Image 1 (cartoon, rainbow, N blue to C red):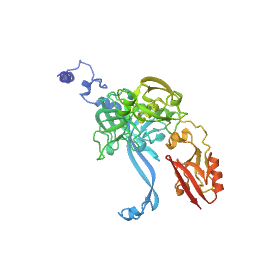
Image 2: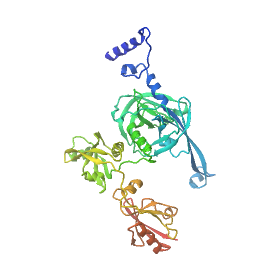
Image 3: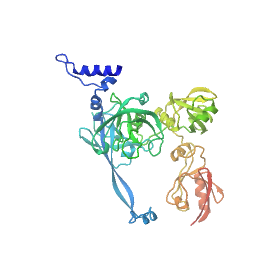
Image 4: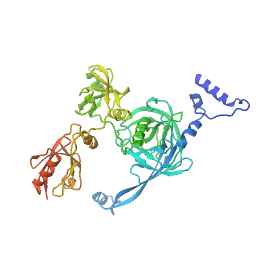
Length: 465
């Protein structure tokens, strides 16, 4: 009854005559009552800053005369002539500054050779990628030599609550700019969208269809709260489970792009952990499952410097709870390299907030990378000393030590070797540095045995040339 009365009063108020000389004014709705009258003010404010993106990229594909044959197609898979073709993609983007900073998804503009940005008023500009990151599915672009473009302000996405009204604006199916409405259905969604499942998302039931990717998710004030990125679907169309990358992470991307970075730099934790489940919580004396229990800490980790140890639980970063590694990575990325984050540690039933430096993975010891010469069986292969930066780059276990294959080159795959393999010995001669690999292979000559460590397993590869 109370809601109905408010709505009745709101509707009556729209029919009352205005004082003589007064003009009707359009304003952003400030309450649920005003929202019930329509989203027009929000759309008028936000839509001009949402753009259509047309991107082209050159891709290589293999052409086989047996491609459509059910038997020979499988038999000769991976064989055939390689040719290049132009691949077109369609998506959306959001202007974030008057001087032409635009955000979209990596899967829309990543590796594109040509990008066209079309505004709602049909103006068209070319754009170039400043910074792109496949893992986060974000790309920051620049439109050169422009000023005075419409843009969206970014809201602090940590303030967003479940149940808030939200609008998704984009160009679904290439039909032109479209607005769909819904609510925020969930927060801190991780491991549920994207191919890698490593993201951290806002969930909404506002329909997000193909072409909406990279578009804006805005609140009732017309402020950006997220960049639409993906959906869970079986049919290919929206079924009410869509995901957006929070604006706080977008803000860090813009900062790094303006600072001249061409790839996104995440703080390095140097720890391994897993979510605390109900059984673990009982063993740890926790009333509820929460946080991430640490199983390993690298000696150079900033968490080690802050007195975190295996068995400790990371419960929150900067006051925000973290229950998965993806959430912790997101919170650290939002804090940013060069800053400190207050990390909540649970140990022996005590909860302590500790300052942890947000650092890039250290390049110590030096990689001393070399490319093996043509006089060896691994000609063209790059080998390096393992250090935190290389471990992070290749996704290796944090305890990795020794000399690692950091670039396969043309010959290593022929022997069955892979990037990330740790070289132990050549014909029984132990490897202690990248230079040792060159010397040992030259001494081995045309035949021998390579001993490597891969995923914790020791393996031997015989070679003869």
